[in-house]
Length: 480
Ligand SMILES: Cc1cc2nc3c(=O)[nH]c(=O)nc-3n(C[C@H](O)[C@H](O)[C@H](O)COP(=O)(O)O)c2cc1C
Image 1 (spheres, rainbow, N blue to C red):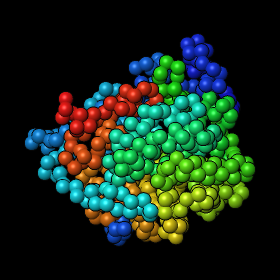
Image 2: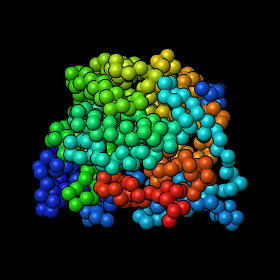
Image 3: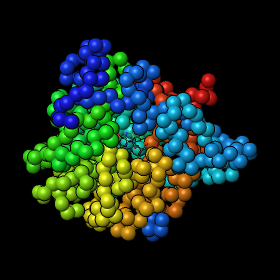
């Protein structure tokens, strides 16, 4: 497909039905839609209103999982056992309306004291080890200003030891999901300040996840500009996750526009954008930042030898492919201490088709570098666990051999397993995504042994406060 080529389906949706401004039209065909949808380190080494032309293919839609405490007979039913794999399978079921009932076996319920011990990740002091994973909710306005409901959404989750914000675009050329917030203008910064202030009032801590989507985007989300990537690899566009909000409220998957290789000046521009966004994070009062180096976005694209085929100093060797990341860390270090900067990586993630034939080499090198760099923490996302194929057991040893610093792990981890992880010293903290999305008072629920709400399939991305502010806490359930 040529840059900017459009196929008929979405264009006709735009022209016939929604009468949207031309710059809001998305380049490409609609692919899918959703209705609103310092511990011992030795241990680590061991171990709707849908468009009819759009078929569902959302990463987190049709979520119908139910959690409850097991009854005695449940142990005979394998489908009811609680494991990371079953949790994931449930949440990603493509069959709409399917419900999986997860249960916590009382014989396996731990006292969870490990998760409630305080800890420090660099200069970030956590009152517990329960971290809220970054989750895009697409509730910013067209200028990338986070909406006022976000204060309530995040404040309700202030019981987390640390909240990692949803991915925040560092500049106007980053946009994989429509209506995601930014942090490069004053307006965007003051929008976030209101959120951060509310969390601090409630005694919580929040850091900003800084995100550049790179090639995972489309012209319609970038003011008709072509997405940027390390070297314009475009043989896998169907696998890129790009989402847009239609005028009728449907949040739909759209085709990625072919990207082009960044010039050296554009690479430098991206580094500067991370630095500026970090400076704005400081102005907004964030407790720190997390660099999004995972899930097939720009930093990960540069790390990948398949996506990064540059022949200049930003490609080739592991040192070259890591240069962008190292320069981003240096730029952010100009505005805050390294002890407030985290890094998220997902060495094995297939998400957004970011292939690496030898992740052990790339990430072994990064582990060495991290050990000497003094960042607040490394956040390892086992992204393939989302599709029921966890890499946890092979991911940890790559880092455990070289890196002894603070570690957060994530993906498909149950509260019980999380407690084991922090007690054994495999990691210092565990990040929960979908459980936190559906349970604003997750720490209280973990302490009480559940029960847990399931995420609803509407309202995941975009839309109103429905599916955003209305998940009940234990307190509200008790009052009802
Ligand atoms: C709705 C939703 C949005 C997400 N957005 C982001 C994001 O902005 N940045 C990111 O690094 N990961 C994002 N993720 C991935 C989560 O951080 C996490 O890795 C994933 O949910 C698996 O963890 P879990 O099994 O505890 O849910 C998102 C996940 C969900 C469910």
